[in-house]
Length: 248
Image (cartoon, rainbow, N blue to C red):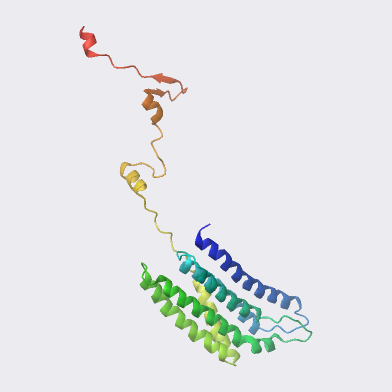
């Protein structure tokens, strides 16, 4: 197990618990749909939090897969995962009572939920930017952060502070559409694997995965014999006649 696999196994487990909390809350609300009023505000917030966690998970994979393991990185990952877990736990109420309206719970907790996700993204951007500085392609990564992070702030922070259903729906709905559009983009092709062996093999017309031509048996060639392609019987090569012996 590599250092990143060890780190990401813990990090992924913590983020996975946040997704499980949101899914459990949604399932509970659906189960009691006849006793409570679900509405559309809380499901939209739950959808955004779920997509935000998934996008954050993808960003962590790209940002930290080449990072050396340290206890500090583990603590940072714990702090980020804790922010997401608290935010996910506040999306749905923990106790369901007859006649409950989820909109009331939404207005009481929406602000803290979105501010927690904003804090998690802020820590992630800061750590990732420090991680890629000085590495090849750092300019493009930093440019991506310079565009995506302000856009996140412009859409999410006003949605956290507004008391208008329309403003919340427009801002968070737009961010959800951005996440879904990113999800529909084709995956980039993997980088070509270059090796000296494959390059030499292509120069002489051999398959790079093939270590030697199939028709040559090197061990038998060293012994001085070969095998018949029909029955596999060994054929001993006769030694060439000596010109000097013929002359005698």
